[in-house]
Length: 317
Length: 255
Ligand SMILES: Nc1ncnc2c1ncn2[C@@H]1O[C@H](COP(=O)(O)OP(=O)(O)OP(=O)(O)O)[C@@H](O)[C@H]1O
Ligand SMILES: [Mg+2]
Image 1 (cartoon, chains in turn brown, green):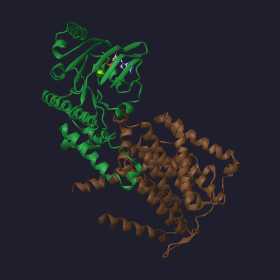
Image 2: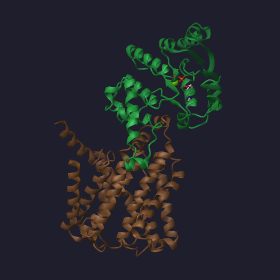
Image 3: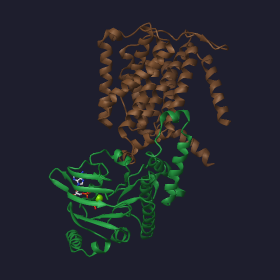
Image 4: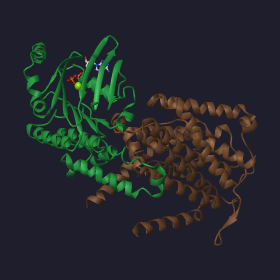
């Protein structure tokens, strides 16, 4: 009951929130919502102990797939978004064969290389990927009405509501997975793969499973992005974006479900309010790099460790 | 009658070193079987080959007459052979209960769709019961919320066994389970192993504590420098001239 109340308050707050901010900030809210799904899905992969540098490219796979099936085949956009997720998951499944011959640092480099190959293919094949210019005029979400509210996707507020519902659903699924025996097995694979295997766990299957699920949700995030901005190109998913994702995850901390999400929210607010106001937008990569180094030095367990300190103290009382 | 486990001509070479050299022995169902030998004799390497952690350079491992050598470790585990590790190998960052729950993996296979939809409640409850009963069995009942890494050494050894026992294996391979235990803990652990065996679990035991080995085992295989040395019941092994020579020789060498 108490939980229900908390979630009801959160929902109401999220409904009111976009009406309190400026138009450009409404757009930021949409990106923030999508980015939350990107980092939260990234965390699922890190549960098995593997860090990928290809996550953003995989997100791009979802974006391209959804853009193409809606534009070329006329598929209904919500279905296209699902196809985007499924395509990203499928590509991840194929990539898992070469990639999971490697572990740790080699996996990291391998995932980067795989991502760059995918990006090269987008650039190389103008048909269907549009080459370096990418795909323009991607179908927007079709407007619809749910009685009390008219979704008009020309407005960022409507897209914010729509993506918030999709992302909330995805987060709920990710959360259920993490708290399930499957999630426990992911942890087991990470912390002591020898013992996990001796307990009958097929390490390769579980690493692949985490990679495929994480990629599927990244693909949905990519598709949500594509149908919002209407144009994507290979540079929308380059390594600079990946560095942002890593920064959110590391600054927030990957020990808890909410850590990376917290990192994403805090850094986005910092970016939008502080940097934009100060006119330091251009230096964003520099400042992110600085924040990353500082947080590794002084806050190795991320923002979540600060939250934990407070909640622990409350429990102790 | 075929034995539960049989190794034939089992050999492991690491480059120029032959760690295990043409080893043969059988483990009968329902027995506690000891595998002893001086340091570096090749006992852990033998375990690694039986459990599928290493592929033997030569020879076979048979389980109920079927060859299992060369299978990956999780396949061997699924056939009913589960092992513990010589150096406490646990999920140190996870709770004691979660460690035991990983041990139930084979019996209660996680299903991701059921988990998302909340349809695996019964399986989760059963896994939890199984995990708790395994912890209880090894005297860890009160510690389920501790982190495994924070446990005392003796408790860590016990937890390693509880994780293995949680899968209810046919054959359990224990690599030096008594190291780091005080005499009282050792005595209790011996009692638990007898109970485990009485419940139908066959045990293959590597141990340097001769009193424990002699007190527990139905049958003992002794090896030295990778080779088979002797086999027999406790009294035979205790008085076997080659065994005495191997251990004394080793001791003299160390001294
Ligand atoms: N992975 C490996 N690579 C190379 N040599 C190894 C490897 N594993 C074991 N050895 C060598 O094989 C021999 C047997 O080692 P093993 O660990 O099986 O002995 P052990 O009987 O278990 O000894 P202990 O009683 O000290 O545990 C040793 O000489 C060891 O150095
Ligand atoms: Mg050993």
